[in-house]
Length: 353
Image 1 (cartoon, rainbow, N blue to C red):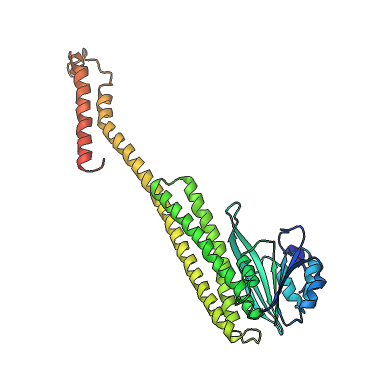
Image 2 (cartoon, rainbow, N blue to C red; image 1 turned 45 degrees about the vertical axis):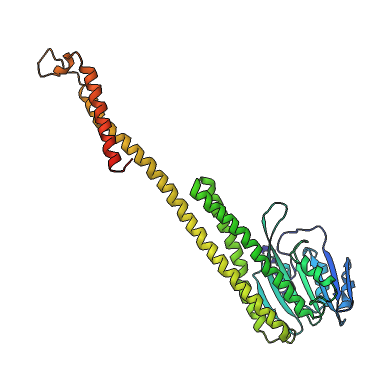
């Protein structure tokens, strides 16, 4: 964000990591009887699809090539502030309405199949009368099932307009939150089992990492609820009444995701308390054993301390006459053993052992 210091509003600066070497542009143009898909390098090839009666989905992977993004924005009449938001990958999920198009910023979360990590990526969606533009940070997303449905003749997407295509894209993003939450659920169950069996220091790290990931997910979903609600309630001519029914379904899913996240956060807080209680109980058990051992040795130490005093019995008959006993030493050891056994029996009856 420091790159934009002192710049006027609408200045196009890519804020974020460059996750691809080259920007890739994919075009899917379709209606009920027609389908076309191709990848292009020149942005000018996208211009001819703007005024077509068919529905066009243009997907851009890689946001570091500002010239291409700016040129595409000019072709479709996108506002400079909108373009600025597209290039800022740290943007909060939002919804805005313009005269001839709608703009949404979403956070797409999915699991990397290679290393199992949770990936969060910003997706910007521009919805026009007969086109949808999506801007992603890198290739690889959750939209492959939608692409497959578009390729099939007679699919519902091909018989509808751009607003329905936008709905399916948003729905794919929201539904994938459930997949990620299932991963979190399994992770939380494993942590819970580990806490019950044998909590270690590594368990605490797992709890903190899971809790941090859950906070990140929550930051993506909470604003999304407002975005979907605004998108649903906005009286725009670009959204047909038939599509609003499906948008209400997305809103319900978003609420469900939020509830699940809050539940998992409460469970994680409880697991943290359980970990601290387990460690405290373990420490108490150790201290109890040490205390009992020390308590047993207190009278034994007292006896040994008495007979460790250097009083000469020849100087006075009162100075430890036991030192002259033939069996004094065994008697003393046996007496100490009896004291220890009696104390152990007493502790067991009190259920301290």
